[in-house]
Length: 311
Ligand code: FAQ
View 1 (spheres, protein in one colour):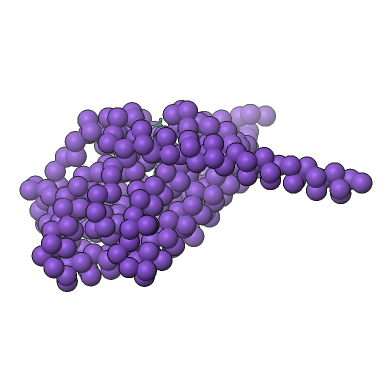
View 2 (cartoon, helix red, strand yellow):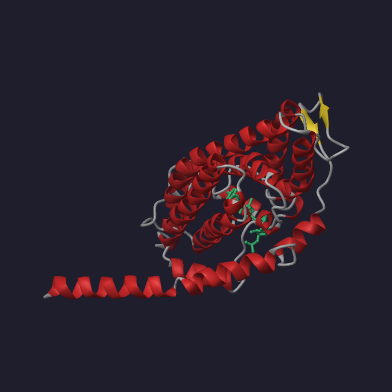
């Protein structure tokens, strides 16, 4: 009976055992996972655009090859994540429709423009750095397919983070103008990177239940603090200033204190009114429409194969 199934599910969660697609699960658990995994997948796919913007203008063949490989990895991450979502009984085509019709979100961070090549380095350093902080604990998420997808994704993300940092190190050893570009990109991406972790815990409707289900392992504020603590020494090593006058080491807490992000900006960007929301969704919609012939051809091929096998 339902109560027995629920009890069995609760026990497995309490013992840190994985929930697999064929196991019974509460509808809310399934819904939360579909929401989070799909939004994560959408973020990877939309996240190809800001960096893709520089593929044709990379300053050398080496930088172009590196950037191309990174953007391809992001497509791969999106695909594993859609596959993980599909194990919950939803279909990728349906999830894509929800994205295009604005019924599902994607990360706020990808609604900011990439103005110079230094942005490519800073995205690797800060955006991939934040993504790793958030995603390493998700390797222990209670839902098996999501947790397993995260293992490979995190390995690739840490490679991305290092490539960003290496690019910035190179620029910092360059001309005064290059150093200015790095500082300017850092100033623009710092606060949006802190917002990637989501609203403060006091204003995060999903955190408590997701923690109880062990889908999330830490709260938004805990991860944000971890990211700040990890990033400040990296900024010092790089020789850039993080644009927060309140940033200082607090020996008592054993953490850095930092200023309050502008939460009204996060709300605005999430609700569709960031600097590039229109452009990002329009590009995604156009790519989907331009790909219709590929999907039609694949479906026709599959139907032909099936008919042949039957004959
Ligand atoms: N942007 O109650 P909470 C990457 C929404 S990394 C947009 O706290 P939750 C790699 C939230 O969905 C980026 N929306 O929600 C890469 C909810 O709305 P809903 C992707 C946000 O789920 C690097 C509402 O606000 N990473 O792609 C944001 O417990 C470089 C209330 O919030 C992931 O998705 C935001 N920043 O916690 C690619 C990681 N924050 O759904 C290319 C997995 C919150 O109820 C280049 N996801 N919202 O309508 C998570 O860990 C969680 O879903 C959080 C949000 C932490 C993002």
